[in-house]
Image 1 (cartoon, rainbow, N blue to C red):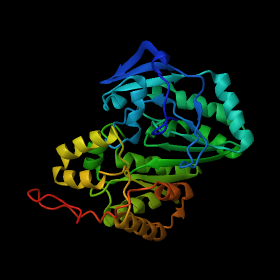
Image 2: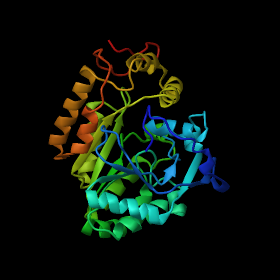
Image 3: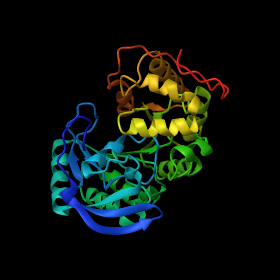
Image 4: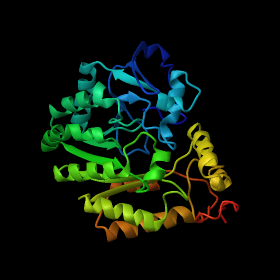
Length: 339
């Protein structure tokens, strides 16, 4: 895992010249790597190892924080993260060796931190599947999975076998029930009803599954009534755990996301610029109000506290200035402000 502010080696020599395939406007290329498992040394993260079977993600989420990782591949265009996907080709023996180390030390593994492990290309490439088959041969693995993809349903039986001998948890990411909005925000991710069905089937299969409302987008997906409806549907699907984070904007994601806001919701552009001018994180009354809303809704719908998700809301520092609350939408002629 490459973390903000940490120098990274030039990865260009690892890139395969072979283009494996094109799916629409997305190109899939080979990427040589020693192992699918990589050590995470950041104290801000509730895990010690990461697994990202791909570099780049075809889901196309406008707010994706991992966009910067393509800079280490020589790309200077933020949108390349969604158009050029690198399929990892690892040494299975080295992946197995590192997996054994994680098990021996009782360390946690996060599958899908900088890319969705069940993005569209997984249906054909199967890199995530091959890693999970290695996990299934072990006992005592501590594994967390985060995805938006419906392809995970292909692996239900495999995940059930893993859960029999290991500690595995799954989070399905869904931030709104507003299908038109989701289509604009996450153009190639499954629509909300599909992801709710994924939650239902995973829960019905006896898997430990939660909903990840991450990130919550100021002015777009943060209204209490909307969050209430979303969590109500998740509870109806049999989900008992909730994780959530707030929008995190660092360059180049910040510039990409603000270009999208300018095109789609121009009334919020200046408010966003001011709110994220000094830090990639929001703090102050807005964050406290949002935490209060989530606590109320967690209790209302019977969700258990998700410690990893709650820690992610608390760990990151923010600017010293106390930002005030976002206002609800105003008429288009009147720009929104943060009073």
